[in-house]
Every structure is written in structure tokens, then in C-alpha cells.
Image 1 (tube, rainbow, N blue to C red):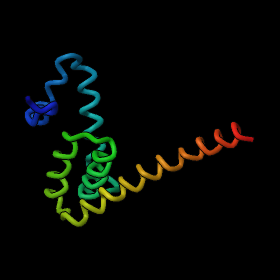
Image 2 (image 1 turned 180 degrees about the horizontal axis):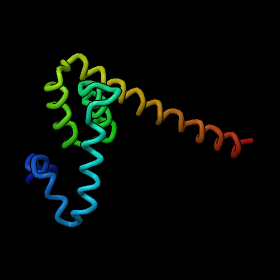
Image 3 (image 1 turned 120 degrees about the vertical axis):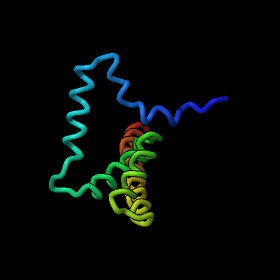
Length: 110
């Protein structure tokens, strides 16, 4: 059985433009602008992208931004800490939705 995610998809990502070259160009232009030098360093942006990649569970992005984080000078400790930040936010988001459940239970049992 082959893997659902295929490693060769990542380096061939640009081929997604075949279905809509105009929209792909807009996306890739935007993507490039986001990661251009700005108020955040390339290392900081790579670490943010790595954390978000874990939060949205994108294996392609995890591969790409693990590599990019290392290339931008991040180390394993920084990358792992970024992952834990994403985990805390994602877990907290799940827990805070528990308030909806709590309110609903209170309404049903009062």
C-alpha cells in the first residue's frame, strides 16, 4: 500500500497551477511576499510556519518548514518549542469550546 501523502508532491507543488494559472500566480506572489523580509526575520517566519504546519497537520508543510527552519538558523530546541506553542494554542482552543458545552448542559439541566 502506498502512502497517502507522497514526498514527490512537495517539490512539484508548482504544478498545481495547471488548473488555474492566474489564481496560482496570485497565490504564489502572495506567498512570496509573506515570506519576504519584513518586521519578522526569516528564522522567525520559518518557526511560525513550522508551528502552524503542525496545528493544521500538513505533512508537506512540516517537511518544508523543518528544513527551512534549520536553513534559517533555528535549532531543534527552538523548533520543538514552536511546536509546543502550537500544541498549547490548539489544546486551549479545544478546551475553551467546552464553555459552549457547559452552557448547554446548564440550560438542559436547570
